Amino acid sequence: MARRRFIQPDLPSLAAAAPAKAPPTGAGWRHEVRLAGVRRLLRIEGGKAVWDDGDAGGLKAVGRSAAKLADGLYEAELCALDAEDRPVPERLEAALAGGEAVAFLHDLLFESTDDIRALTLEARLERLAATARPALGPKLRLVQPLPGGGQPLLDAACRLGLPGIVSRRLDAAYGAEGARLEALCGPPPPQAAGRVHVDRADKALWPAHGEAQPVTKADLAGYYEAIAPWLLPYIAGRPCTVVTAPDGVFGEVTWVRHEGHWQGSLRTSPLITHWTVAEKAKTYPGFDTAEALVQAADMAIVEIHPWNSVPGQPMLPGRLVFDLDPEEGQALDEILAAAVELKARLARAGLAAFLKSSGKRGVHLVTPLLQREDAPTSWQAARDYAKRLCLEMAADSPGLYTTALPKAQRRGRIFLDYLRNDPGHHAVALLSPRAVAGAPVSMPLDWADARKALAGQPWTVRNAAARLRKRDPWADLEAAAAPLPP
Image 1: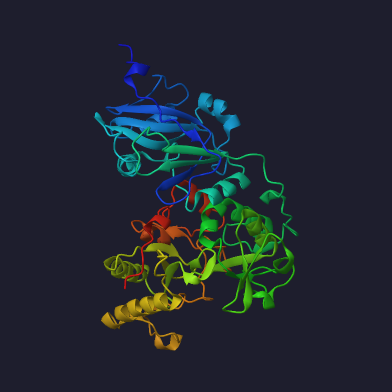
Image 2: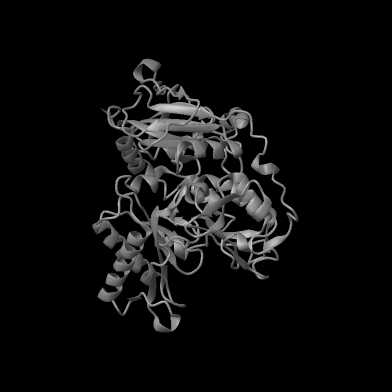
């Protein structure tokens, strides 16, 4: 019996994307990389995957993964990717014919036979994530949101050679007018990141480690450029302290803070932002573009530590950072138990907690703060709140936790460090490398699989970017911001 073919009248139309000169601003939008593939409707029925034209063609490999999806109608995009998972439109035709195409799931329109297009995008995506999880793999992926504001993301996408970004309104029904916008990249800027000169590009900053090859300045520049869409929203608009290692991380390593410590390009490069903070009577470096990050690699900047301020406003706190620092040899389960307890205490106060590895032994919890224009939260209030939270936790479990700074007083307990929450104080950036063997990075983590992620292969400049392109555990960081409780 011939396979049934679904004809066009059976299927709804794909939601149209309206062109936009610039991405929308403000909350309520989800920004994604424009994949430059072919958008298609995918129907799953009884373990069979059928595309909107009824023909699998060279899509059998994708279809085998898609067949694991629950019954329903999905919006997917077929793409060709390069070795770094970037879309390559000119390879799409060959990828479709040769079975090398990858499908990205954008949306869920029907759940089994139930039409859910009238639900908000946010609600549909929650259902899509739940139903897609068992089927995801190299050939079938979820479209991941980009962190940060629209225009900086578009600028970063263009610098990385991507086609542009798509913005979708979270409270809109499928196909609603003006709910899907796409902003495309125009001609490349005159100073593309790849054109920043990296002197002595083959200089090894991290020596060979185990089976891993040395990490050179060129490798570091490539890493910074690749993770710019995730790193820049975390550091842009904020003064920074950096760690330089011109002779490699096992040579002389220097902490560079204000302009009194600057040398060479850090002082003279127009790519570096110079933040003059009047209250401190000092000027600090900042890194607000992908070009600035490549320049950082040229200067052998192997760690970046931003202030935890509101972007553009150094004297206002924009997040709380807690550093859970274990003693040598403490078990991973003890560290994660401390993180979970601190997360629960923050949740009781209406605050979110995002987890990342420190890149060394400990973990960091980051809580985004929402500043109110009528009653801004001061650094003193933020620090006092973080201190009180840690003191209470240590008092409740004095055998497990401590806030004592001297290491001699810790006696096998986890140090709850709240001291990052002051103007001029800082913590290692999300995704920043660390100046230790193996080139590890401070990696964003899912709470659900944090133990597996920390116990497995370390996240390094070699593998972090590829992981983020598949899933960004911190995609909702900005949306989760809440005011500090009174």
